[in-house]
Amino acid sequence: LVLNGSVLKIDPRYFSLKGGLDRWLYRVARKHAGSHGSKGFEISLQTLHEKSGSMQPLRFFKRDLLKVVNRNELPGIKLTPIQKGRQLKIKMVYTGDEASDAQTLDEVSRDKLVEALPEKGDVIPIAKKRKSASPAAAANHDDGEMVSVENIVGRFKARIRGKATQGFLEPETIEAVRSSCPGLDVYALHEDFKAWVEDDADRQPADWQKAFIGWAKRHYDRVRHQLR
Image (cartoon, rainbow, N blue to C red; front, side):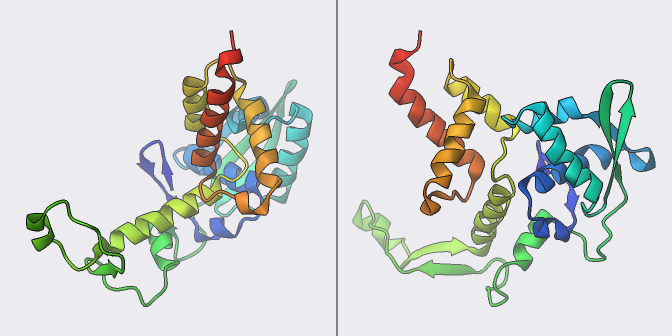
């Protein structure tokens, strides 16, 4: 799992989690609780609400989040609600990857590829030939464009990571949209984007974060002359 440049191990059962909120909470818990050992890590529900970028009112977010906490089914993570005065906190304890074959995201991505892929370092020819700018360049060009297995794995890994954040905003995405679309409400934009995606089954993006950033920029280009 890649978070802010750091690579963490991820339980393969993460990919079996069905709810977007479950997957998002796993990533938060794995990042923060993983370095706190048996004492765990506590975070307020208010902070989780802000980190999620959800447009839900806090009371509805609390309702949905507590369903995940009470199920307590995140792999390798123990969740406990703790009431401290008027503040509700969630305690997250990393118990270790219970699956014996716990892997990094890179390894899981490779395992999900077809077993018949060539060995690492091999290349796969693409049928369409790329035109060269000059006869000299053409003489040094192969019959087809050559794509390494590493590139294929990288693309597949990006798709997995993109699918895992469906419906939620990463902090980097929020900052990117605020920077490129000044004057617009990023959370309201996200709700409009979700409605736009749900309106057509063919609009389901492979990478939710990149798709939203691109959509927001296009929307901003259309309306920025109306902003003061």
